[in-house]
Image (cartoon, rainbow, N blue to C red):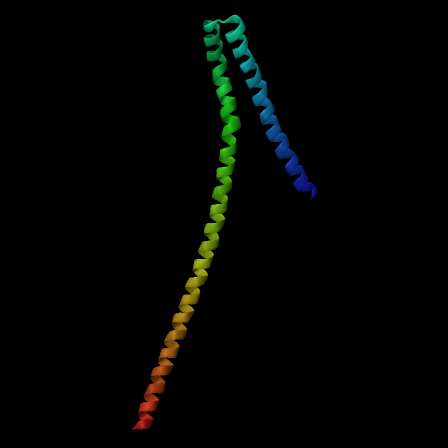
Length: 125
């Protein structure tokens, strides 16, 4: 592996690890808070108030962390489809050129055949 590919690989790992660490830093205390309030304090009003305050933040982080992966996969699929479409377009253009060449060759052979028939008819006369 080259140094450049190693660097890209490390950056990718660090970026994914960092987003995972942020998700854990927010989610673990949130879950601990839920457990403490539900089991020990048994205070539903406090649970509702704090959930309302922190729920948006937790939802945002979970959405970001789990939402970025499908987008990356989808963009990769779109790029692959574009490459395949371009290859198919090139193949179709080549096939069209080949078809025109075959058509021209067929017309030339047909003319030569017609000329041969005329020559043969003239010889028979």
